[in-house]
Amino acid sequence: MYYIIGYENILEFINKTIGLRGTSFNYYNEFFIKYSVFDRIPDSDIPLITSYEGALPYCYDHLLTLKDKYTNNSEKINSMIVNNVFYEWLYTLSKYDKIYELINRIIKIVIVNKLSSYTNGTTQKTIGLASMDFKDEFDYQDFIELVFHQLTHMVLFIDDIANIHMNEDTKGIHVEVDGVKSVFGNNMFPIYLLFHSYIVGVEILSFRSQLFGLNSSAKYHGSTDRIVRLCKKMSCIIKENINMFSGRSREIFKESLHLLNVFEHYKETK
Image (cartoon, rainbow, N blue to C red):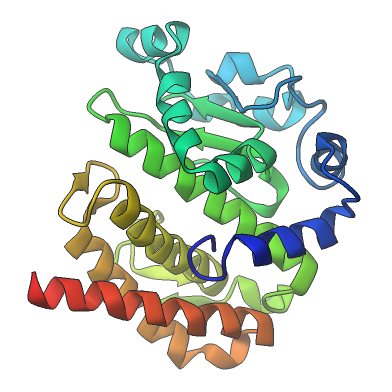
């Protein structure tokens, strides 16, 4: 969304949703208490980066229901949390001030913890709470891209509150995407989840292009070619079902296609 519609447009609809008057973090915190799973918000101007146990005091009821889905971190990951490695990595984004500002305003907690099973990821009920199944082999680029990945989901969910992307009774309709495996182990996707996955893919391509270069690759998202290929397949299914979407989500989709075409051209001519 940062690259598709721009920073100013994001601020406009976030402020509309949150009812922001001025720049106080309190308005954001009130929004998270109202719309998300937080019992209280960490007293910090940057996200709290912690394990499952470290996040429990802030989202106790929600996280307790997911207790069996989390498992113990490795010694390496625990050491990285204790020694503030993830904070150091996050701070490198401060040179991209607008992206860094959005992260600090919208993401309140980043849980870095291994999972034993899928948790449904970021949803409209968990805006502000990012969770990463961070593997030992993941690195700086994986972490930074995953933070931006989570931010994009959250911005989309806030925009859906402000502008409505599609009717609630159609969000769960499943569609088939040939050659793309879902987290459910098949190639069937709820249409709104597919829309999110597609938009996140296009945003990650743009983010990677700016920060790491398109020739880079990450262990979680894979190569640029892979992301382009998946986005093309998903965009075709969204086009086929575009009547399910609102004017707002159609506008976002239309703008995203301009960016995807740029990256498709990269794939063809590199």
